[in-house]
Image (cartoon, rainbow, N blue to C red):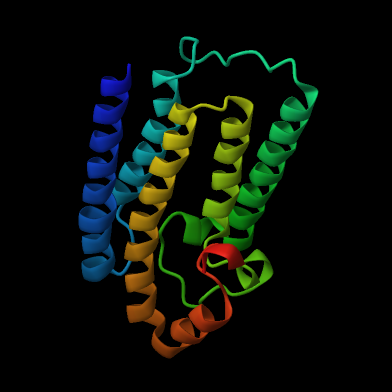
Length: 186
C-alpha cells in the first residue's frame, strides 16, 4: 500500500501543479478570471484529494470508518470538522458566489472573515482535513494533509499573482496587514 500511496501522492501533486500553476495561471493572466474549464479542474483536484483518503481508509468508498472508542478523539475531531465547515461556508458566503465562481469582481474583498485571512476557505477546508487526521490518525492521513498543503500553495500562488496584477498597491497593502493563511503561517 505504501508504494501505491506514494505514487498517487506524486501524481496528485503533479496534476495540481499543472492545473493551478499552468492552466489557472494562464486564465488569470490572459482572461483576468477563471474559465469554466479552470473552475471545473480546480473542483476536480480537490475532489480527487478528498477521495485520496480511500487509499488508506479501511473501508470502501463512500463509507466512513466508525468513530474511535476514545471519546476525546471523537469529540475533538468532530468539533474541528464542524468549525472548519462553518469557516468554509462563511468564507464562500462572505466572498460571494460571483467571486467563488471565478467571475471578475471590481473590488478586492477585505471585509468579514477576509480581515483575518486572505484564504479563509482554505483554512476552513484544512481544518476539516485536520479533523479527519485526528479521527483516523496515521502516517497516511498525515501525508494526506501535507498533500493538501502543497495543493493549496499552488492555488494560492496563482491567485496572488493575479490579485497583485489586478489590484496593485491595494493588494500589497492588504498582504502587509492580513496573513496568507493564519498568523502562525504568515
